[in-house]
Amino acid sequence: MPTVMLTGANRGIGLEFVKSFAADGWRVHACARNTEKARELRGLGGEVVPHKLDVTNGLKVASLARELAGETIDLLINNAGVRGSRAAFGDTDYDDWAQVLQVNTLAPLRMVERFADHLAKSERRLVVNISSIMGSIGRTSSGGDYVYRSSKAALNMVTRTLANDLAPRGITVISFHPGWVRTDMGGPSASISESESVKGMRQKIEALTTADSGRFFNYDGAPIEW
Image (cartoon, rainbow, N blue to C red; front, side):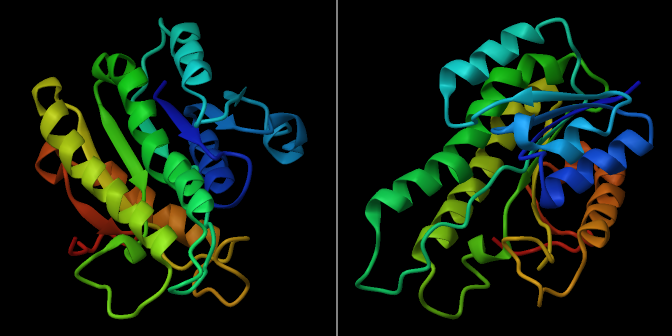
């Protein structure tokens, strides 16, 4: 039975990933900060194992890694993320920026560092970082959104660097833009549903090879410039 570990699993794209993998017979380690309030997640049953986890807490992440020391993880999806302040130039909330970086950039690296051994034992050996096209420097043509853009641009650099560091262990690492999705973050006017986004990303995940490591893809599998 293949195993996936997923952060931010209690709602939106994360919850849709959990449902999709569980329906296909995967064992799902579903991590969320408030699992006690995640009724839909806890009600899925089957091979879905909820874990209460704050990804910004290094001690908690390390504790979970020790708890699952005997587990093999085929796929790690770093999905947990926050939007942060949308303040324009001149009104930047620097405390908020630091918190967004903790969640969107530092936490994914922390998860990979702690669970690399679990991944290396598997046959698939995949890490997926949920980024955003807003983190693409080449696609940036407007101002504002310094907080979110920079956190995702930094995450993309983490992806690229991890791909180099983990290549000797056969671990493939990529970034995904999930599309503009109708979630709490994306809003009701977004162009695609959660199921469309996850379906597209899963199709690309199944087709990944080590040659794709360190790349940035749209949810439909099309490459995105850094």
